[in-house]
Length: 493
Ligand SMILES: *Cc1c(COP(=O)(O)O)cnc(C)c1O
Image (tube, rainbow, N blue to C red; front, side):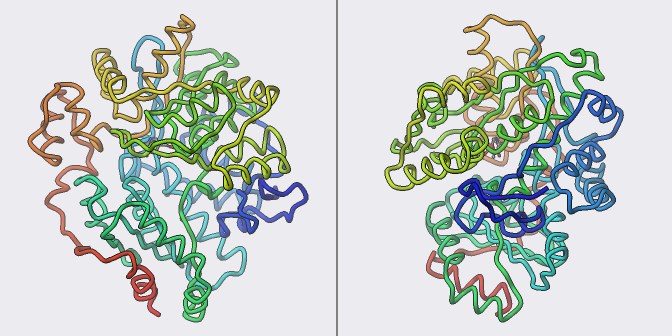
């Protein structure tokens, strides 16, 4: 299987290892496979009998043809085994009579980013060897919370890699800060920036595009790499859990093999829902893909009227991982639907005027698969209460998805099973969940975990237990201008 850029119809084509190593294509586009492999009903039956790591290895094998079966199986067993995902990687849980959650947050950092970031470092480490790369890959991450911790946990002690995470010193929650500052591992660094998330992100982008820094690093045997969701190595692993969830719906007799199931995904960068689309394209009987947004409703508007317009105000919400104005992975959908030439033209419009419009036919083609809903903060809090009334404790991101399902049911009045991607443990956002359920503030961010546990009689997940008592390894903060020096220092230049 070869990969090419979403912005070029004529190649160059690269191997999957090369695509994972490079992250972004040289022309600024995203890597996509030359074709979408298929899955037959018979294969789905076979997969149904396997545990999650084997299912994931099978699906990845269809896309990553330059990785051997043994390599993928061994990596998936390590990434998704009992040690990192006690009780299974993507279990199903009923929310109400028709809504079934696929819970993607049973990994080390309690958010769905683990589903990709536990396996991607292993894929990159192998990619370096497969492409004859002898230098160490230094992963630079700017984070507003969830991605940083998941990447640290994924890259910790992975051979031939180092990881350095920058976060805004006052821009992440107390729990998120402690999760990062107490990170273990010999190849990790965490640096707080005296600035906001944009300062951190701009700083990282500057370092990536600075030839002098790159040259200094190269002389010391270091290349730069990134861990964000435009990398194919993060997207491919996400396809597996939609296939897996479908298999489990069948094996638990919630549906019959072949029955079509709609899927709802709380969406920010369009990565997770695009993985569901690829599972559908492969042949998994998925129906409509419901794209759920918070108050940042750029995708809702796009799916309703075909205009993508990033010129709008940015809202901070209680589902921060979906506070996004540019959904980068939407580019991959435009490529699949309309081809590289049109995709490139639309992306150029987005870069120059911050907006583009689809034709009527193009919008119909997208609406054949997708529908969008958005929930403001009140609707999100209400959905947390409705889910809890039914016996399910949902985090704010998952609740945005549940709100979309409720709105869709009101509009269509349906009673078929529907799958909801449950993307974070409620304890990761304990204060806001507690507030939504009680209308009261918890004493503070950390005590909110205990208060939520007492209120709902549900356990605090092991990775978040005693987080206030762990040894803090990374303290202090630097000005954004100091970021390059910190990178060189950590790289050992
Ligand atoms: C990142 C994230 C999302 C959004 O996923 P995308 O792939 O960016 O659409 C939703 N929920 C949680 C908890 C996340 O961390």
